[in-house]
Image (tube, rainbow over all chains, first blue to last red; front, top):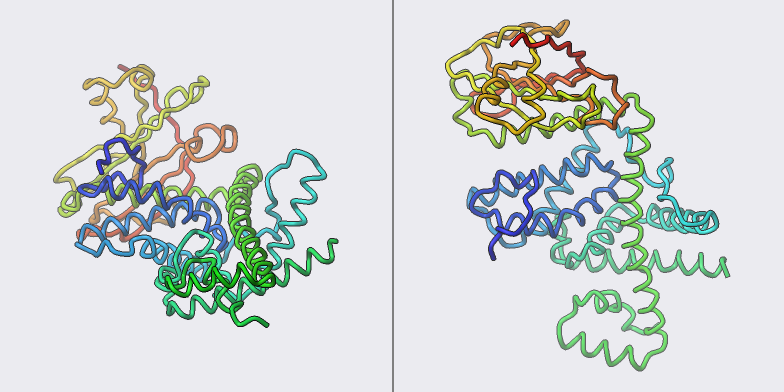
Length: 184
Length: 232
């Protein structure tokens, strides 16, 4: 497929021979990567930095004859590792989770905003109650990654991913059902 | 408890083999409890997607709040933005370019800034082969026509005479004459909303690049830029 019609963005400006392929990947995976990084606690700008760095590394990877197989999990793994490195290397100053002052966007009505806020808070609390591995598995699953790909991103076996996802879904389901029951 | 429940999530995720999947499908049709659980698990999946969207939106929202609040967050963001710009510049400029003591000066024209004209984000590069020291500490302003009209060769040439950043003005930063460097001046209004940064404040980044091409040192700080009126 030709990349001529693909609008180029800055991180892809350096791609030479594989511009079409890289541009397609960028358009396809940029938002999922940003969402995942936001869930890991990165602020918007930082997440964009990480995504750009990931695509620059992808360029180097492809340029040096790296394998084209599993590019999606490759990109997520690079972004995941960079995010974790950043978090461990310096004190986080902004981009905290929902409970630290960042709130959902404005809603149409105050009532809906209150309900939405409460729902978001409960959901965030339920997610926070999961283990890190459970949360990461669920978030990567939400971005459409297969169990095999999730395993490649997190460096764990596919069977472990299956077990972790199942456990996480059941734990969240229990909490959501509990909330629904109380709500009713 | 129905033993098929153990495979419900994997079945919903289409992670089972063909035979297992077909068996699960038949079972779920006949088992009310598994059907109920499958519906719940689908809701959970949708909730996680909504959570991810919410987090991404909150991340953007937090950015807006920091913009409004100003303070240290802005400086940090400025640093991040400049670092990315520098990284991209390093990446985009051929490696051999740095290998023999070559300086790259990036000037940033923002003429029209004080006239209510949206500044154009034009990066001007100036290459000075075979020069190992940094440029003279002169700061000049190009003509308004040069920035506001389509670039011509002559105008481009004039712009190239515009080293925006003087050298060694940084208190406590020792001169480093024997190392090639990149100096980048980025107007505050290119990184911040209008009015967030006082007029005339640029962010100046200075980068030393090793002969191998990797960044050896990065300095960055806000800078009040005073332009000299061009005389010709």
